[in-house]
Image (cartoon, rainbow over all chains, first blue to last red; front, top):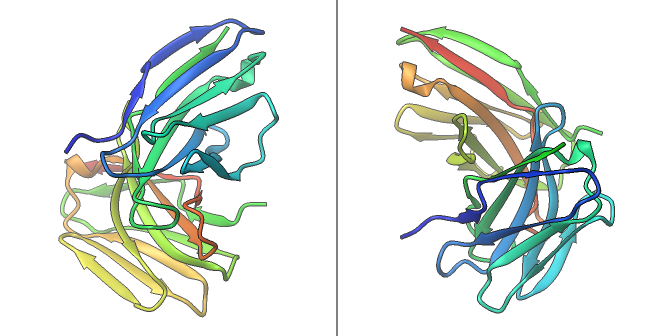
Length: 113
Length: 113
């Protein structure tokens, strides 16, 4: 069974630009969560999607948004990039909300110059 | 407000020794406690998880000990091997119907040959 896949794996952007990251969950998993990982703050929750609906949101500014499609694939978007947005963005999938374990993808490394 | 406190930040253990990582939580609504292992350039991988109704869970060389009254849990790695060198994260999830995980800051483990 294929794991969680994330594309692209690496991105370099400049301040003010926007970026879209993609996540394909494990087959049969319908819940997708996004996390930001930085050396200083560690792993921080961004948002959670299930059935194309955002069910929970972390404490991030409105520049961070996401969506989920009918096939459970998810995208997250960051607009007006800031230097502090440089991080590893991780996607995790599970069978459903609070159902079973969460499995993480390899992440997308975003560098903002 | 750090809801899950993890210690130590870093740990050096000799091959064959026991590695012990501790976590403490504040929110009594947490009802699921997973541990993740992360290698450089990879996403976190689920190692082992426990719920508050058991005090210990063992899988191979990995054991979680859970103390509900003290709101603490720990990961023990028996017979530590150089291949165990990685960053370990404890996490917690509320019984709120969300998949959201709250992570500790992580412990960098180095197992010396």
